[in-house]
Image (spheres, rainbow, N blue to C red):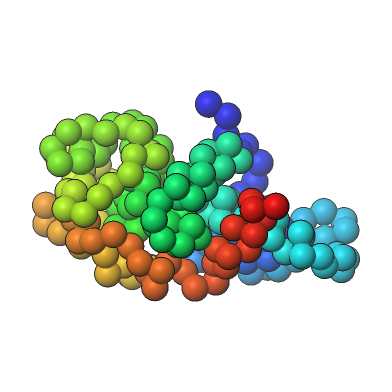
Amino acid sequence: MAKYRESSCRICRKEGVKLFLKGERCHSGKCAFERRPYGPGQHGKERKRVTDYRIQLREKQKVKCMYGLLENQFRLFYERASRMKGATGENLLSLLERRLDNVVYRLGMAASRMQARQLVNHRHFTVNGKTVDIPSYIVKKGDIIAVKEKSRNSAVFKGAIEYAGERAPIPAWLQLEKETFKGVVLREPERADVPPDIKENLIVELYSK
């Protein structure tokens, strides 16, 4: 499967916002965006022509990179959201938030979505007692996400669970049980549970053209 292989820090600098793609590094003084908050390359500091299309495209690219998706994957999520009842933009964000790799990250069981995706691929998690190794698996209300028993002694999970919720608060639609290495989906995420700096209406406008 194709995947992005360039520096993650370049993405944040290009989009002009910190997307927390590198886990612990993003919270330290080594963060490239903190040191150089402008676009990468020799023309990074130059002012770009601002058009409606550029604004819409950059918003779509920002959200796509935030959740670690390729263009075709993101388009499929949008098409699925457009067939659901309600506002397409909010449906899209709800689907992206309910991806298993994102839920693992939101629960604090991984330092970044990239790491969460790798841990899911390596079969470290179960959903309702069954092993799931598909990062794009969509969880629903009542689902229980747990670290496998044999994986709980790993330093990766012990460290993550110990500090879960300190770097970033666990959203209200999820509940973490640190003692049992489990997370519970209390309800589907609402718009208020998603970062407010995402302008999903711009994505809808872009795809509606």
